[in-house]
Image 1 (cartoon, one colour):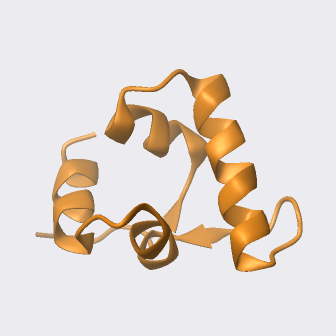
Image 2 (cartoon, one colour; image 1 turned 180 degrees about the horizontal axis):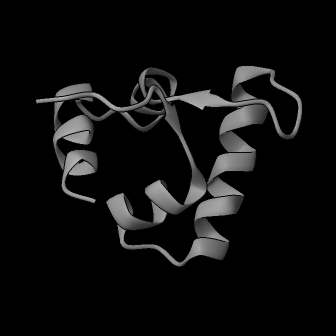
Image 3 (cartoon, rainbow, N blue to C red; image 1 turned 60 degrees about the horizontal axis):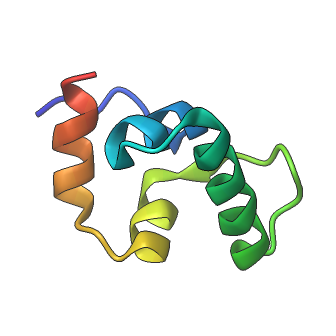
Length: 66
């Protein structure tokens, strides 16, 4: 499995969860607040997985198919 990037975007979250992009952006904002990051700061796949409680391997595998 080739990892192209370490940053996750709201569009990725929408695809992973089946949520709308608007809901995914709201989730991303909550995630940044949980992490103590400022709006616009990048969020890594690892941080998202820790927040969402999902396996990093599963997320990376799914993102490889995007």
